[in-house]
Image (cartoon, rainbow over all chains, first blue to last red; front, side):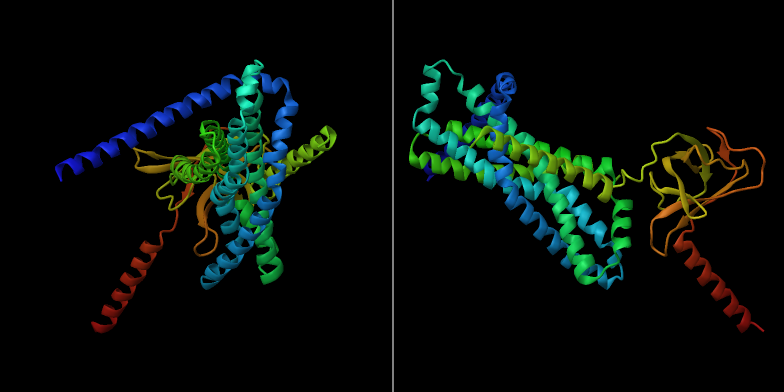
Length: 264
Length: 158
């Protein structure tokens, strides 16, 4: 009995130490990527290729989800606001919830599952097939050649995707609210413009999406680089990327929101 | 994929992203209506500012002529002081008065600037002398009930 209890506690301790040391390794990996970013900026076409795979190929899912999230917000918002006779504020509701929260967060969640998992699988497989070791043999730094371009490509793509998501969402809200239901278009836009501040709302949303982009990408890269070189290892690493980065996005979102919008 | 098509797609993506940010800034946000021109500041004290917030509009005859720059509490007079930043192209007489109004019954609060008749104009840093604070709905209801009670007792007495 006593022995089993001690065993459990020992297990908790081991897992905690594992987690913390993994975080430390990940942080060192992050620093390493930043330090080795120079060469990839000199060969910018590497980054452009990664912007294509991470950003352009994620466009469809981001645009469609943005449109539908906006349309649902329009419908649901109208239902609630209408009971208070405040359906003209629909624009405010749709735009503020998108620009402040849903745009950066949902775009980052989609980005983590669309682009983050792909990055992990790609790098994990490169490692499993010993391409990374081969690069080292040829005195090519794999961090500078493989990891850093992917990092910058994804970090550049993320804010653009989040902005596109928010813009599509506002258009979706407009489609449902104004075109379909018939809220006054003038009130929709003018109340929105009166309520949404460029610095307070839009810029903070962009900052959020940059932070989420960095978090998702570094988690994806680290999981891929750290994956055991087996089929199972790569598959587990891909799953872990999606789970960890989703949790990181939500946690970071709370922290950032608490800092940015503390009821001024 | 060809390098040229890759560049084209990435270029399109970046342009679309920037257009989205501009759309958010100009059409959704208030960057388009920001007056980046010269401004001058005027101070005003109120006995009660109600729910006035920084960046609330300052309107004269219903037209936005400036914004509330700062709100603070004056510990000597126990009054709220509000700094207004007004667009330099609008000048107001020295004896203009400021009142805190509400747009609609439950809408946001703004400062209404009523032009006076003085020949001298307000300069940067001047203070508005005549001000009227926000109407607090609770006080109004309280007064109304009090008056009603009083009139009822007067009717009952004789």
